[in-house]
Image 1 (cartoon, helix red, strand yellow):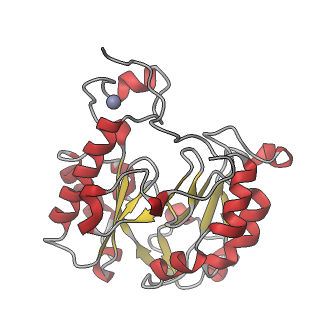
Image 2 (cartoon, protein in one colour; image 1 turned 60 degrees about the vertical axis):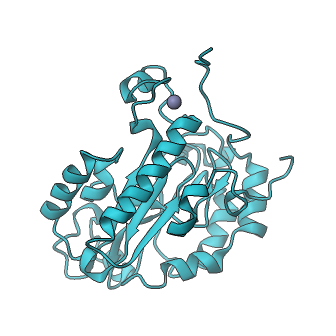
Length: 271
Ligand SMILES: [Zn+2]
């Protein structure tokens, strides 16, 4: 029998505002996030999305629920804490652009989307985003089928395991060219971050060609690799659509990793 009902496996589902509050106040490992970002050059802009996908957001911020709220004055991850406790976002991101000084860029009204030639621009982190919805699932079909059924954010166990297999294969392919890689469980799929200093200096053309080349083999969101989509989830933050923690997964642990791994399971009320 084929189960066409297709939402999310197990207890994956949106976190309530109270669950988000508990997580950001008491359980988020800000120090681990800080350590993960420590080798990055330059300064970052962070971004919060309050309720775009979950429809859950503090009522007083309803006019802001769909747009990324930029946090420009957080120099360290722990500086985000008051913002997270106030806005209780469904997702926490950073912009992969690196700046000599965000304060200087802000004061000069630098357009972050077109900062490539700016004097304060220190490059962009190279990243790959593997999404389960980009896979052709034997049960749920391809991305067009899923979008038609408004299930672009759902995934099944087959899709999760195939995305995980691809993350391992992509990591190993990238390891032939780059030395500092980090695979991160993103809540639904996986991200592969390339942290080599040379990767920050790639041009947009080089990134676009790389996105096309790897996009032929992997279920990639090519816009992330090409640099058009700059926001990426902050490791150790909460993915509010699935109630899982975004966590780095050592390459050796990847084959056995599941979304029910204890490292990704937040302590949430009532779960
Ligand atoms: Zn499926």
